[in-house]
Image 1 (tube, rainbow, N blue to C red):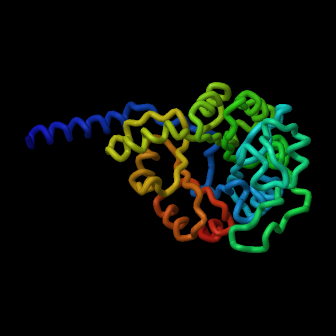
Image 2 (image 1 turned 90 degrees about the vertical axis):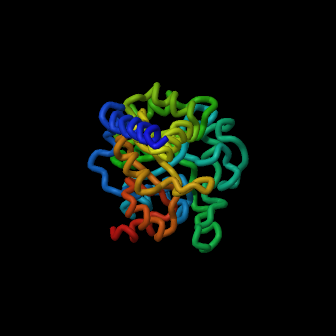
Length: 291
C-alpha cells in the first residue's frame, strides 16, 4: 500500500512539474504593464463615499489617486451603453423601470443620487437634487482617457459585446481595460468579439481553478484570461490564501480581492501578495498603503 501511495505522489508531482513547464499560462495583458501592486480599485467609483457609478464618484476617486476605476454597464433601448450596477433604475434613483426598456433621455432624466447614502452613517441622501445622472460609458472614456478601468458586463440579453468592443476601439481604450462578468456566455462572447482586451475569469472558469488548487493541482490549470477576482471566502471556504496567490501567479494570473472595506483585511491581503483590492472605501485603502 505504501508503495502505491508513493507512486501516486510521484505521478502528482510529475504532473505539477509538467504543468509548470508546458501548460499555457494566462495571456499577458498590457493593462497590467507598470501597474503598482496592489492596485487600489475604486468599486463603482467608491460606493461607500460617493453616489455609485457616476462621474461625480469617478472624479473624486481619481482626485484621491486611485489606480483603477471599477464600473458596471448596461445598454439603453436606443443602443447607448450606460454605467449602472443594476438592470433597473429603481434602487438608487427617483425612477422605475428596466434600463434596456428605456431611452437614454429617459434614463438620464432620473436623479442618480436620489436614494444613495454613505456607508459610514452620515447624512442621508447628501447628494440628492444636485443634478447627478447615470453617465454614458463614452462620457467616462472622454473624461478619463488615460485611466485604467475594470468594467463588468452586467447585461446579457440583448448582447452588448459588439457595441462595447466598438466603443473601446473608438476611444483606443483596449490596453487600459479589464473586462469582467459573472456570466460565462457574456464574457466568452466578448472575448471572441474583442480578443485584444484583457479579461478576468468568469464564475464558470474560476470554479474549476479553485477546485484544482484545493486538490494541489492548480498549477495544471490553463487559463485563457488574465486575472482572478475573488472574495476572501465563500460558502465557509477561505479562497484567498498565500498558497492560492502563489499558484495563480505561477499560472500568470493577477489576483484581485473584492469587496474589501476593512483596513485589517486590506493589510492582511497586502501581506498575501494580492495584485489589486476592490473597495468601496478607497480612502481607507490608500491610508492602509501609506499613499
